[in-house]
Image: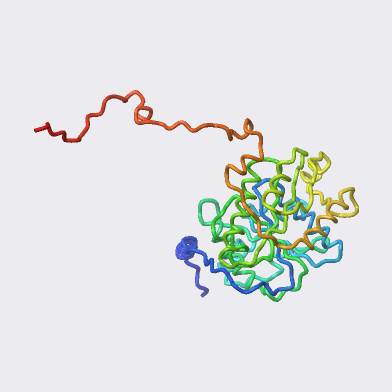
Length: 333
């Protein structure tokens, strides 16, 4: 008779794992792997998945072997590549297979289109685990599947940039990637995230790490220039400016690939692919909060606002009144 898995114990073990602190020791040796492993960060919704799906497709069209790994719990990286189809994630597949007493095979989690190999790490159920810990667990499973023995020219990692916990900072903290690319637009929030990523890179470089920022992709560029000014201020190049074009918006919404020479956008993504390949990892100069706000018109960001301190009476509202002091006052002798 087969043993029935104890789901309560399994759930407890997952919760215990979520509370474990990830190891963030910084390797001191320069990276030696010939494969270019590139981590792409950006604010949620800024267009990382759009950029990466089309970049990876163009790289494959140029004859390169490309592996695209989605490292966002939303698992939306590969959706555009696969025409809106959601592929099974590594974490959910591993959980299901483990409960059935089976091993995960590469064909369970890795799929192909247009010469691109792609997979999603996934994440825990909402409210039931740590997304960063899920990323760490996902890479542990990749290692068991033989990640270090695979033969690719490029491995592209799509990371959520809003979250700064250890799991999402893994490629930077552990020198897993040789370089980082940030995707942003001409808005304060996406540049705030880009600046945070530059700060993380600089922090680990001070500790002896080797990861650098190769540059920025400006998505939905409306020509106002804030993202370009940010790139210049932090000393990173612009790898491509993808315009805020209605044709791109419609094709992206319909899960259509534009990173191919069969479309009018082929030249743009060819240039991006060439720049990504050649750009060296640089040490950025992250901005202070005031420096970041200074890139924008003060009326837009509120940068010229003067903080007015609150007092005790403000906090008490209708209960405000004289408060008797507990201080003991002695009469003069």
